[in-house]
Length: 356
Image (cartoon, rainbow, N blue to C red; front, side, top):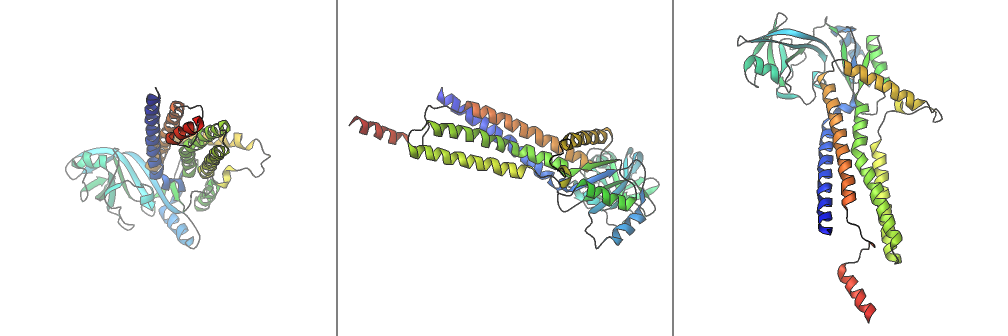
């Protein structure tokens, strides 16, 4: 019976560790997105030339890396092999790579002055050229001919080019050096640049904070469960040395809990009230964030935000699974009436000495 409980404990513990490892992998993949914000407008608010002038005038300031774009759906694309299809056409100004993070699988992004270059998705490359390696081929879109410079990961038909100076831009993505930048600071920067407040804004650091907390939650619960068990085991000990050892172990588990608590919460100043006596702050904040989330998910998100959102849910789901398996492992852990650190050989010697 005890062997079965040990086997069950090892199985649940291994599965819990595996789930947590996959959650950690997903969190690390999306970690750079925790520093980014995306502002969505319902109409064009700035031209490419105006954006260049603003960022050039702000070069000495500590401003975020910025990308702006205009998106048009159901555009006709004609390939050099007499194939055609419809897809999404993006005109981008600024740093194109922050709009498609970790998605370039072949080639390069077109350089800033490359008006005839483009990047396309893997799906569009297969649709027009029958291969994933469509670099160097030509595509016609909106009366212009573009040469494929790079291939992006993705099954959707997507083509991205550099926006002309006179082209209007309607969405903006900001990338900062830290994930502790308040959303209010990003909104202020956008208002200075466009003169208009965004209709919707995607906070990468908020979803990063949710992923981080869910990732550390199994450690927090482990510290509590193990600390309680070691404390109970210490109380049962009659020998002072054994009792002391168990209490030291309890202290270590308490340190594990405090370490996890300290590292699990990473929020910008916007998420803390100016006065802790303001009891209505967090209910109002929660209501506001739920409303913003509903507005965001009701509209189409850019690929970078969609990946962050998917990665966040994946991390939370895997961390929750790890926590559930951790509870199963704790329930399967073999019980003993009295726990101590002496080996069975020492116990046999103690019994013999007692008989003498």
